[in-house]
Image (cartoon, rainbow, N blue to C red; front, side, top):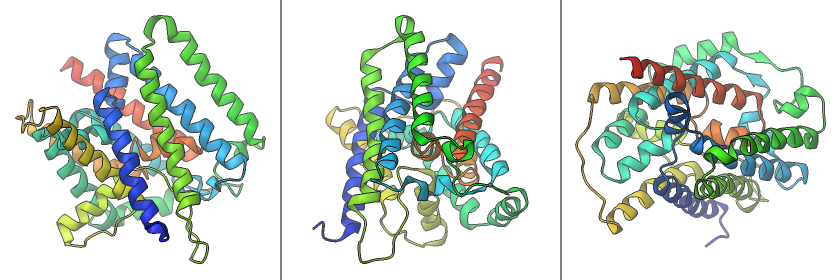
Length: 341
């Protein structure tokens, strides 16, 4: 079965998606909720969980690169063409949209798997507008912006270590120290051990994804493909293209990963008798508009909170760092605005 590398991509994508989806669903881990909790009530429990995720994901991914197990520098996040405008604007739009839609990329897929009508509405508009931005009428303006605003980095790698001209191990040590410092500083007031463990498990799926696409699924006799990891906005654009243009996407690691989240959420909700086509609370227009911004922003910014926020940031890419900061700012500003309205 696993003589064909494609089978590794499909099976591991489904398995890692199922693990990620089960943990995120059970512990209600969502970047929007994490930032909103800090913004509104100064609750850092979920931001600590995300810090644990990043600590594990970054450490493991960087060790895969430093030990020459996976050539992480070939990943798309480390491309030396920096579309700074697309990344910042796309990240900000995604953050705004996710807040309006009621959850980040993984959360809306989980809600859809639970039968939640708001989640189903969100993933429909997410997918369609991601497709429009990637393949449709917005493709021209997106490409025009990219060609006219991108800058070529002076180094041959967009990793922070290369750009700063210091050893990778030094940058890793600094990042680990910062994350540990944040965890320690907030431990007494906000630490929830179960959430920290859950976050660490999510981080470990990133490492497994890089190892799968960079080692297990490599065809020694075929054309070499760069390693990739988890994302949702990319698969959404291809599923949206199927809905709009009838072009069926081929199975890939990222599509399998997203389907794994959807399937495990559906199965878990059935087993726990929580599956329900629950009615939409609030404005359907707001959810549809927010999900549309998620699709556009995720495409414009080369990834969502999963692609840039887990996979990309684990490569210590400048692009991903800018995207994550923009997403967080978008969530924070929109949360404040919604509080006042």
